[in-house]
Image 1 (cartoon, rainbow, N blue to C red):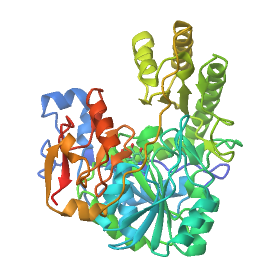
Image 2: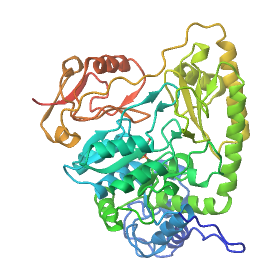
Image 3: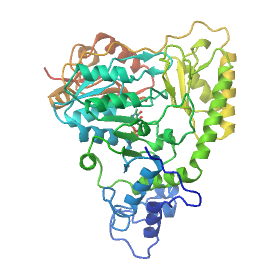
Image 4: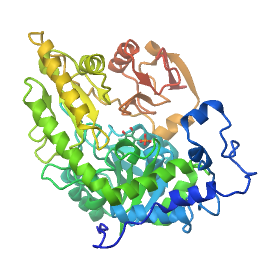
Length: 493
Ligand SMILES: Cc1ncc(COP(=O)(O)O)c(C=O)c1O
């Protein structure tokens, strides 16, 4: 991989697309084209949120700014600048999140009847991509750690799975996980190359990884490890606007750029938000100027915070040497995962404590852990407040009872139909109790973290019904058509 390092005396490219939008917005000509607000403060509520310039830059695709799938113009230039900055061969900007990037990666790589090797703990978008492409899943052995959620596979596991099933045409991995862990991907990439199948990596939570200072415990980016296509959500960790993502193709990758382009044209809007896309251009400009230094400072602060929490017995921040994890697991230093179960409290209790006592909102909690996303936009004072809140938590919990049950992974449901077959057959809504033994026709997925409890095509088991009944009492959000979980959509048999 070649990463662009500015030569001494050379200046990083300006944010050319953002500049082109601004230039267009300042033209004296009166627009008689979309969008309907005409760049004016027209909707009262909206004009409180967006500045005049922001509204004027909310533009559709035009010759002056370039179409996002075109190879010329300021938007194409901005995508090339981003590719150079992160070391990809080609980068496409997306305004519909990594979800659309995952859909496009699979559509570009496989077709109906092909098999895809992936983890059953992949994000919902991977299963949606199976429905869209008509490919069938082949699952890697599912491993779950109480401290760190799903454990990714290593190169040997992937090589064995590829050897066992010649139908596999692509491998899709998530790295880092929602808990910020991963395994070195170079060995996985080599196993895929030996078999001639592309390695597709959902790096939605790792857009910052290529820009972090090297460290022995640092999880490297899939871009440097030899993956063929990589999807990232800079909105999650780098500061571009929510919904922005990048699909990267690496040099010498097995998936032809024309196939990626054709797949993107199928799954993305013809009116992507140019404000969102411009925020990716501004993000790249930040990375090329102050970004790496600010990220390095954020990493140093996060490492100090993690060590300070480690001293607060019995709290256990996730990091190197964590019990039950393979020795080659690597970490995202900006994902703070703290196991609070030693205090007798659950992660959900700790989440409530952080909000009530310190006005801090975490990203996610499970039975044992609280997960926080840290980054360059967090001032040191916030981290100090977080540390004090954790200290108060363990003091207040002294002498409490037994630790709560560790988060667990229940047996994976048997797959009766492919996701596409289950979604295309006639279906009906049945009361939850009657769904037992039936084939589910919709994804049943709690968000966050977006890992489906049931994938379309799987048979609903007794334990799942009980867990869903339990979930009805919790304040969590599910993707089901009936959000109250009283009914489930199942295939009519
Ligand atoms: C692992 C993973 N992949 C993909 C996505 C989808 O990303 P986006 O929300 O940008 O569409 C998410 C979102 O949480 C995710 O956690």
